[in-house]
Length: 395
Image (cartoon, rainbow, N blue to C red; front, side, top):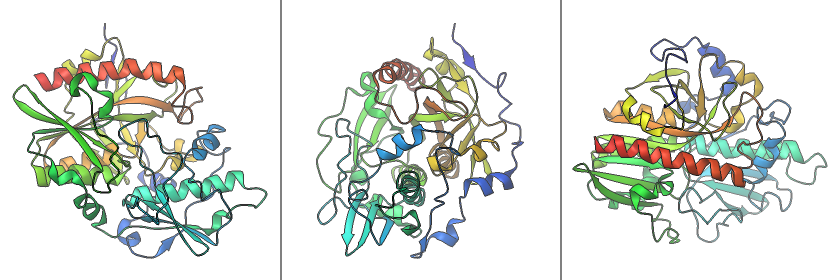
């Protein structure tokens, strides 16, 4: 029998949030973008440590995997994070890119200008700020000897309004043929539905996307992967573009998120829902995944819960956790995609692996996602995600 968690277990999703919106706004530090989206520089929090973050000691391992080699090479007069997608000289590719997967492997590049180091992210306000927070936090935690750049010298410049759409316009996304439904995210894990992807790693700045289109139940379904990161508001901009430029009727997002509830072991559960808190505002929608489709995940249990969208993992501190109230899941994208879908009047649903738990410590978290036990657990979950998708798309 399927263990399908629903509103009988969690607080009813239709209820208004009992969370203090003002308190969450103060804790998450997600400033008004109309004030930020200029060419002025901003400073990250730089006050997060292993003792006050929910990842604890794992935070250092997680951060270390994100640090461009030039950040660690010497102290800089300034490290400035900007929104610019550049992978050709004089930009310097990150040595730690995981090129054994077709998507979500391109990481921010570096550019040296005198004694300043620019870290160049695919343009997106959340993405830029997130990387500045990562860098400043890493330097705060590790550089007690003062041999690297002081975290006070880390800053970021948010991309102006519309810059993400301009960057997307320069990619190959416009080459997509006509289709009805978009499946986004970890689509390279859906081999039984897609038949696999080929020619993934052509090094062209215009070749940021790859896709496979399948005809399922008389509808064209595009499984779309992105070589940079869907991070935060970038994901919402992609959904907006697919709705407004390509006329899709539905967007489905397959990914991973964190639990904020005790007793939820990572890499054993799937998660879905129909509500997210985005920048302090509740965003509801009708979940595209019906209960009969979710039941196809058996024997894997599916949790149906309430979601919070935060712009950076660094925001997930112990103080933040104390404010989440009746919410169940957290990640940077779900609410952004849902809000874009609601605005465009298209259907939306997410089905995610619960990859970590910020409420209590488990051996599996974001710092060791490539360990053998984690990979084995996720392989089972990907199979059941495909079973849910197969039923949903075929009915």
